[in-house]
Image (cartoon, rainbow over all chains, first blue to last red; front, top):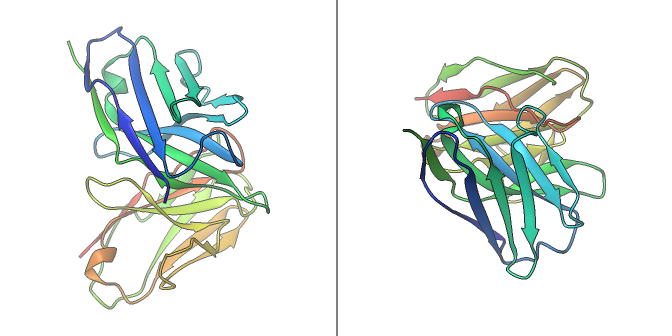
Length: 123
Length: 106
């Protein structure tokens, strides 16, 4: 059973860089047709896909955040990470790491999620 | 970006009812549509992918239909554990956008 767990600071000041790590267990981030993803959700609101990285290292980011986002892999630790620079209060949200999967038919879906971590941006 | 619009935003129902939630895409997305359930304080859980395929382990009381721009999620015989938020998501093109959610309330 694949499990994902987010970790990182929960409180940031405006203009700082958000850094989160997702530790994956029960499967290797180096194998398969998976998208190692970050998705966020402001309190009481909907979900926003931030971006993802393939096991090959290729990345895909939401254009609305692309100038500030970096997702990277650490295969030696079976982890992937999110960096979001120049944060503001609008970046306050629960951040989820998740595994996206593309099956043999080309269907894409997010089948495993971490429990989520709340990041608050406040001066 | 493809806009996903769900209706209704909230829905009241009773145990044993059958309910249908609608999701409309701003352009043709084929069958590239997923449905998730989210309970308070929990991560979303995949229910349906490719518009109508039931994710492994998800009860058959959940079903999805549609293609193009209009999609439905139907839940039969509501049980207390089904009262949650439901989100659709398009995977036709990046950025992979979600609907705003439907809160299913007792």
